[in-house]
Image (tube, rainbow, N blue to C red; front, side, top):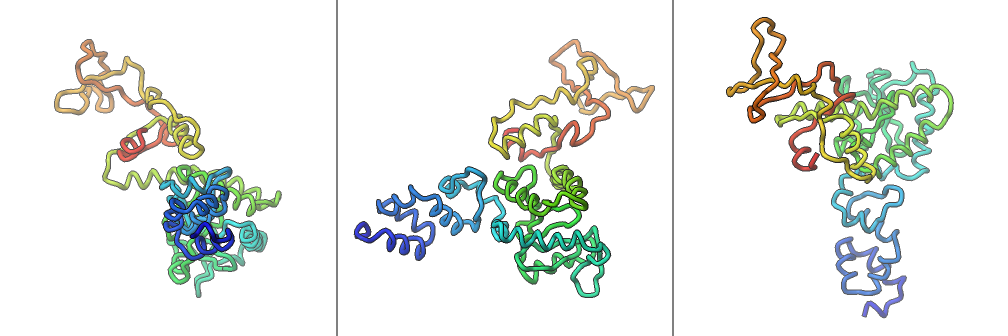
Length: 322
């Protein structure tokens, strides 16, 4: 009987009165519904929004694929509140007033607070002009979220975005392309003027990816799991694979982190390295004649994290195959 209904009425019945699961289930038995879904990305975007609360997608993305992609749900749904250009422009105007005005007049909106830059956050919810101080001070930014449920906030001095509900920095190096592209659009809007102080903010913003990597590393170090050093070129290639869908890198090769073969040293059965009696800070470099003996190559001196290597945990190694 559904096939006898006009398409307009069928559309209203299916997409205005049924949840996303029911619509997809109905499409298996109703050719008219199935035909509507096949022909329309906008209908799939409605179903995705019903399912996840997410109203944005990466450039060239397919809403039908997004509906069935479990990874898509890792996007921050609260960014949907600021994903259209009208809201971005309205938020940008608020930001312009803060940046271009006298710095001494920009302070926390909390009663009797008075905290000023650099510990200030701007609420990104449309029409909200609240400026909150950080958790390191009087926590008025956090209190504003708890009272209003306004999830997205921006750190004014570094132009970084945080979601209080998702409890994460947005557009980190491991975020999905859709999230990174939306934040990049926001940044382009906020930093559009080609003059100071926007030029200085762009320079400061160039360090944000590095800040996110360091934050993720600190989280790893605080967990009770095995940690591994991975050569930086591989990690950069892996992040590119995860964020832009380019070809994955080959196997990990940490040889650049290690000294040459001549520095191979012998390990005793009990574990640990044999110390030189003459110098407590040195190790006996012994080239092993028997390759079956247990041995380890020393890590090169003067290596720096984020320049030469990254730190990953066991979950990354086993779960993602890196």
